[in-house]
Image (tube, rainbow, N blue to C red; front, side, top):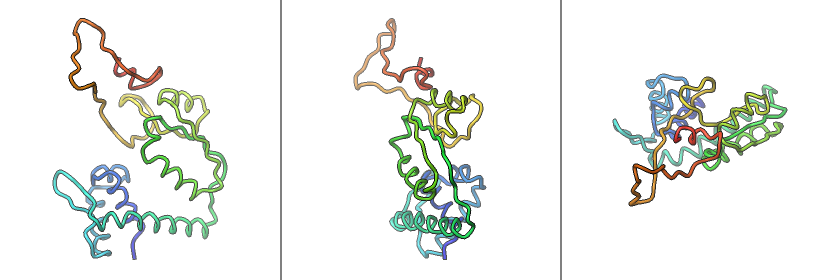
Length: 194
């Protein structure tokens, strides 16, 4: 009843709240993403997103579809793995930046463990600079970490801008050094701030 490709597109739009970002993430054209969502809405007979030129939000039915879509795709993947006989095995040394550990990463890793129970997943949580060094040295297989736009390698999954924050009423003396709270070296945000 529900096409897995449409469900994957729906989940990507729901995660990013952007048809453009979902298209980039999935390697599709934005018109294809819109078409997938429209077809899923036709199949359900419900509107899953409210959208205008500036924002995308899940409707109540869209929120309900989130859980269904994840479970449908999980079962679809399990059936495909069972009947194709291809199961991932071995060890994956995965590194994640401290910044990402408190986001949706635990949920993603739990899902990975559920889908690939025969993979021995080793998690390393470190500063992004340290993770890049460990990857280059062959001590990690995969990392989710920050990098500067000009740094080579990797696949962009999210772009964000740094912002200065301070206590309300903070006044800086232009003749004195700026008091900073930063990560230790080789922190990327530390280097950019300095």
